Image 1: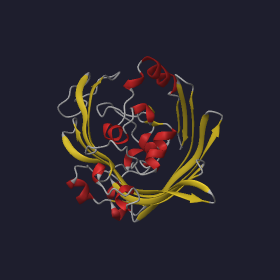
Image 2: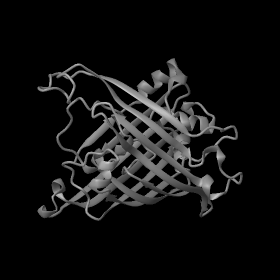
Image 3: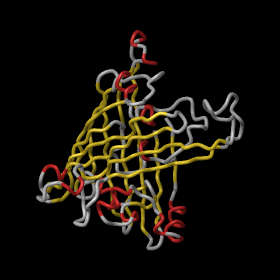
Length: 323
């Protein structure tokens, strides 16, 4: 088990006060909804209530003025300094310390599946399908690879006289579908250097399955209060992973399907939104990819909470995750 604590409120407040238009978001989404980045984000990638509803509606909300293909690009240069030099170099082709690198260059197709070119009828099925597709060039490993990928279908519903969203998704990274920044895919730290040494071990949900699996699930967001989700994930297979640029060496692939679950309650407390939830994944795995070694049973369970409030010129967000 481990705990993660992050309180990004004061950096966010300083950013909003000093330069409110510098908050970053995916440009494809900005053009689609014809709104500034701070409409959906406190700071990237932390979502506010509007941003969470945009994602829950399947990335499909669209302004009448939208007229461009939902493409976006990202360049992330970096400089990495470690307290101790790494003998033999931080990575092939890099020095033992003080390295500049292009950490990643990404291409996104993200938003309504057919962009602004879909049917005029807002209730048409195509207009309820959204995507988040990312292909990334790794400037350290010098390889293109499939990154986060998700397809959603979502519709607004009325249940017990209360409004909400019901949706389905398919993606390749457990928890990337989540709308709070307390689950692993979108949690702090939001980015890092692959030239710096990291922990030798970690929970399966903390990134080791990203782009290595495929899965699907369904969710319900009801009355701006309750979120419930169930899904399952399966290993992609070493051959497919190799074709899309992923290195599966040393991984412990999932055997069969691994169920995933998520339950959260978000309560309005005055001007604040306070979320409490739990999530988990249960799987059987071949240790190190060796089927002859039998299977391991892994159970990842997490509890999380997020408190978020807008204070006029300032925003405050506090996050807590225990796994």
